[in-house]
Amino acid sequence: MSAMSLGVMARSLCGVLLFTAPVSGQVATVTDAERFAIDWTVERKGDCAWVTGYVSNRTDKAMTSVRLLIEELDESGQVAHTAVAFVSADLSASSRASFRTAVAGTGARYRVTVRSYNGVRSR
Image (cartoon, rainbow, N blue to C red):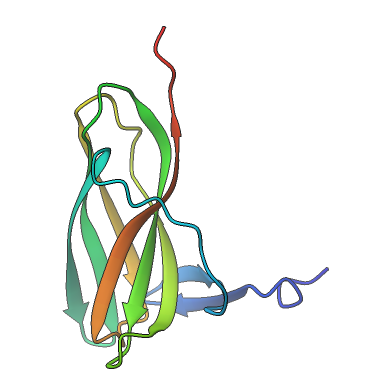
């Protein structure tokens, strides 16, 4: 089965290969402000844009494989493009780690949420 038949597109932006999924349909997201805090900015450089920031683990448990959903919103607030960013390291209790990912750069606004993560059980 080809990538196109799976509804996945790849494109190059700012020298980075991006994988984007179709915008239609709903995406399950984790928006638990008790567990995570996300601080981020958008850096625009010519035709390129980068979303960079930090994810903080507000719990007393370690979190691994943290993935973020970055949505570029058009002028009417509709999702125009999506990207997934991977947090650079596992998050030990009460720690933070950085992320940085290229985006299409055409958004009027952006929304960043935790898409998924794995919690580590206490011993």
